[in-house]
Image (cartoon, rainbow, N blue to C red; front, side, top):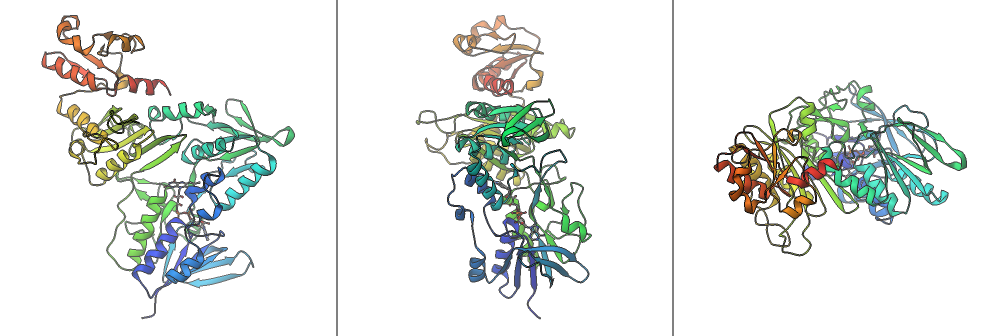
Length: 548
Ligand code: FAD
């Protein structure tokens, strides 16, 4: 039997990892990668930091070169070659050499599509004006850097507060530009719950970024003196020397659609668990495909590098006849901004509510990233969402300066094995004073949620605050600095002696700084016959919810 001819469209995250894996499994296969851009296997995730001058020189973004693919893997890379069509019946693709214009037809035994995603550009006036950029490729980075340098740009408007928008803001500030963020939603990082990104809003303001939240882009117009005017739905005009559009991406399905491959309900290429499309000889991976959300079981789109790389590997195994499956995604992601880190996995509270679900509970906690007695301890604010009644973990989000993503990674991994909050209670994690605590934040999150499920520590949802008597058990000086509307103060140390001051029948919501003293108070009160509940995460959660 002759060696299989495997063609790959797109040579970056999914395509390059598929190609390398194919070679590791099948030494005989002929593997050819077609990439319309000038580079393969480059770090698009590093592009914002290259624009900001943090990653220099540009060549550091190149993870592997065509030369390396050829010498190390005997994989042929054709950059500057665009695949313009697929003939599934004949098992050929049409390829245009972008330098010469020559078109050729290439036969395949297996075809892998990893064409990525396309930045969303809504049909609004002015989005194609000079000085308006999207951020996707190395050539994009070059254009932006050149524009800033040659025009002496001083003011930038970033449209879109997702992770690419935020990374661009940090890097533009690093270059000394004044930056305004225009975001249609009232919050940055749209997949996350709003209170969990409140610290990012604070960080943006602290670093001089003007926030135009809850105000969508309407148009961009040329203004006097080579500037642009970014007009928003509210009628505001933000002057800019350059505009970064970072309002999301959509799967690039051009080739797949034209070839008659099935698309999914979210608009991505439909694939099975082996990443095979509706055509038995064509596989697809990366930002272009629709995959299953592990938590909801529903189809979803997730444009992230980790899934693209893993899918490339799965497709290679499947093409080579190995048993394999892609288990789905749960949206595990992290973003850094001005020294803060925000990370998430699984479903947010707002996504569950949007889906009409009510079978879940939420806890908040604000422990230190490591033992408080070791210098440099910093708060990690963590939110855990779990299913009622079985405690299955549905999602988690965290924000802080240090140790944020390691907690989310631990919870994400546990979730992939179907963990419950009871499993998180039991998780055995690293501990030494400079790294964590004997009860890690992950354990604590599990314990608080497990206590709620066992009925030891009922939790009042924050939306319901104000319906019950609120008892603040912090010390008088803390109480004096701010509390919930209508709250009464009985410090925990005095509680046993002042029980007569509490309402006998009705529910009591108990508050403290971060939820620990209130936990002790709730346990005390419940054993004395009071219907006491915890306000999870205490005043720190209240401040995050208020600071939106
Ligand atoms: P890509 O890596 O985009 O590769 C697709 C390639 O296919 C492109 O080079 C394109 O030119 C080529 N192509 C398309 N059509 C054709 C055709 N017809 N013929 C030939 N070639 C074609 N993810 C994270 O997880 N963490 C991050 O920190 C992160 N940061 C990011 C920062 C930026 C600025 C960007 C743009 C993305 C970032 N991502 C990040 C997302 C991540 O880069 C993508 O999810 C990942 O690259 C997707 O891999 P892919 O193979 O599907 O597509």
